[in-house]
Length: 168
Image (cartoon, rainbow, N blue to C red; front, top):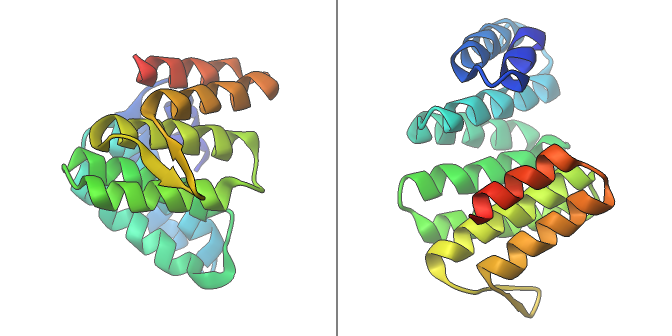
């Protein structure tokens, strides 16, 4: 996962995909299902960045199945990526459901998960209009703004910039 992670941080998604594929292939030979789920999710993220939405979705569904009901920390990211994969395929209602799950699962997680869950909800709301979350209506603008706030509080400036970029 190291090579894939380093390549990801440098913006080389082709190399990230290649490194992460090697890691996934090795992990499939072990009983390390939690790590496999995490690496599948990361590989799917690289594939999303390359526009490979169907393959990303397949990997994410496998990661989610591996996590099961135990709620491994991979789930918030996997559902967030799944929302983006569904958006990329024009399946907005499925994207909304995945974005809602990502947000729900991120409430008690790191600012990274929570801020990006709001970012993805903003992407979805920009396609489908305002969305209902826990009896509140959230516009795309309000969702993006919430993501920005999360990252500002956590002093995660590069992640805040990503929300602002997606906000447009």
